[in-house]
Length: 216
Image (cartoon, rainbow, N blue to C red; front, side):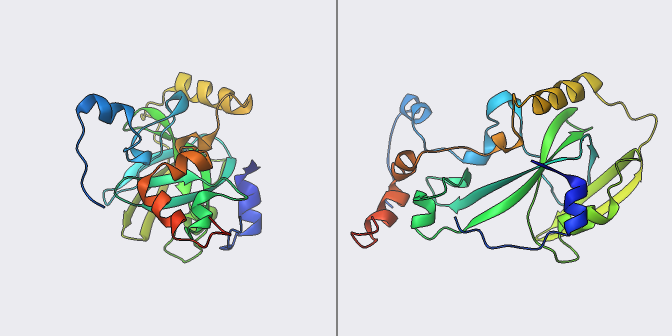
């Protein structure tokens, strides 16, 4: 983990990370299977990602803690979403799926009245999310941010935090305490699969089988 100020100081630049036919089943089998969209289901401790949409949404930064996760995004029918990179011999790396860094920060969402996780990529273009926030966030001030996106272009507006806006201080304190004591991690919003579990997905297993024997 690092702090947001260290990101501001470094002005992080983008880096390269080194590291079929339809089927039928009953609903009970589906519930037991892994045929699920990974990012749609909150995992441990109810942490979930903050979704930036076309409509402006409010967020309040509650900590300068930044956790950087190395993840893969897949868009297969059987497995669509993010998964943590397993590093050396990662099944997703082996099939050529590029790993990327995501910078994660805890934010309070006044609409859901919950602490959520804001995920930011390394993109340093002027309309990307991270560089705009690096120039606007001031933890010495109480600020309210309105964030929206149109495709890959983000819009960020900031204003003083309204005194009339209720914040769930208990939820905020509970989350920050759990983060400080390493009871939870911001990267919990991403699913973890072993290389063997990844290879159980037919799409990934097929890609692995197409590699040369010495790589498979």
